[in-house]
Structure formats: structure tokens, C-alpha cells
Amino acid sequence: MSYDFSDHSRDKINTLTEQSIQFIKPARFLKHTAWKENYKSHVNQISMFGNTMIRDDTRLMQHYGFTSAPLAGANALVHGIMGSNSNNVITGTHDERYTPRDLQPGEVVLFDYQGQSIELRHNQTINISSMMTTTINVDGKNQITITDGLVHITGNATIDHDVEIDGNLHVKGNVTCDSDVTASGISLKSHKHTSGAQGSPTSPPQ
Image (cartoon, rainbow, N blue to C red; front, side):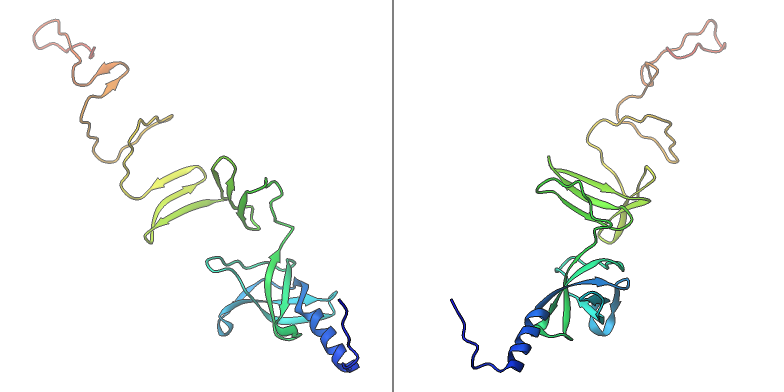
């Protein structure tokens, strides 16, 4: 297929060429991303075409339900609306400095620059990695907090299985048992004591 541009002036051809260049272009973030209220969007200052073109307050168009604030130095893919050089939106971002490199086909990782991540791995495995604290909120309330190996449950807990504690257990309230308690093989309900004479101390439980 061939096209005849004989009826197009040089100026019109130059305009079309410029618009085609501006439709989609690579860029780099020059600043950390910030929210701009009057734009109702995150914005950034970007550099395009080998740092020969700089645009301030360029909006980030992101997927519904997901928002990120890329750092200075991240890469971007910019669309010029209708081939515009001034009306730009960022539609894609990438930062190779922090991108996980060990994904297998089909795996998904949500990550940040601190090394924190949520990994959806093969074999239906989910890994949550945090440098300090992991908090799970349910119905606006802090339900589970894990800090440096500590698990803190702030609501009632029901465990429908056995519990094994490899350490000491300290209870500030009452302990209630519907069955029996065994300590070193001796039952709390059915242990026995012997006594040598009336009024004398009994033997240890047995």
C-alpha cells in the first residue's frame, strides 16, 4: 500500500511528523512523585528526548485500585494527547533499581524501594516481607500486628486445633479449662497425695 502526500504542504507534513513523535515517548522522573490537589492526581517533573525537553506537573494515569509514587530516577512512558507536546500524561512506569529479578512465569510481586513485598508465588504460596512491622486491619481496626517476630492479636481468638508453645507462657487473667490439666505427667483432677500421720504434711502430688 502506498500513500500520496503530494497534496500536503511541507508545513503540514512537518506537523504530522511532530505529532507522531509526541504520541508516545520515553521519559525519566526528575523528582519524587507528589500529589497535586488541583490536578486530583500524582504529578512529576519529567525529562524527555535526552534531557532536551522538561515538563513540570505531568500527571500519572494509574489503574483503578492501585496507586504508586515513583521516585526520582525512575523511567516513564509518556503519551502526548492527540500528539500534543504540552498535554502529556504518564501511562507507564518502571524502576530497574528496585524491580525483583527472581520471578518465575506467572508470578506477581508488589514491591517498593525498601525491599518490602507481597509475593504471589507458584504452588499457591503468598509471601509477605516487611523490614519492620506488618499490620493487618479489618473493619478499620488493627487486628494483627507482626513486629520483629512478635504476633499481637488485639481481638478474641478461636483456635480449632492443638497449640504448642516453645517457650514460657504468661497469663495476666484467669485460665479456664473444661477438661484436665497435666503437668509433668500428673493430672490436676485425679492426682493423689499420701500422708504419714494425721495433720502431717502430705506428699507431693502423684
